Length: 103
Image (cartoon, rainbow, N blue to C red; front, side, top):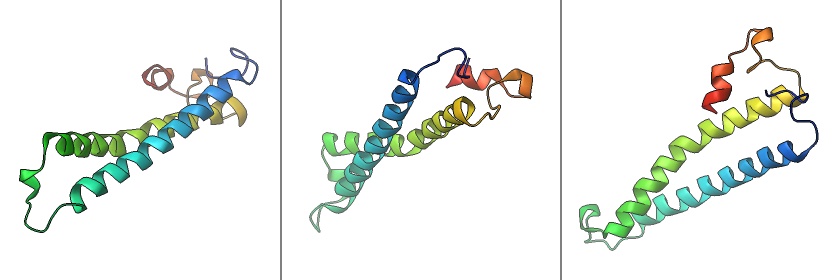
């Protein structure tokens, strides 16, 4: 399902590229939120005294920093299967189609 034969044309490639761009922007925004919530406090304010919004932004940013590179790796493998004849997801080339399902 990841080869060019199933989805010919460049529309799918544009979608994959836009997901990459969205992932990079999410990672950069998450880094901004985590750094801001951890460093931009007053000297006497403890991290436990921060507001709920600061905690939510910090935790969500940390989770995005951890999760988005995995998605980017899977999308890069998908682009490699489509254009460079790799067999990450093709069972005929000893690939694993379950990885494609989990993508």
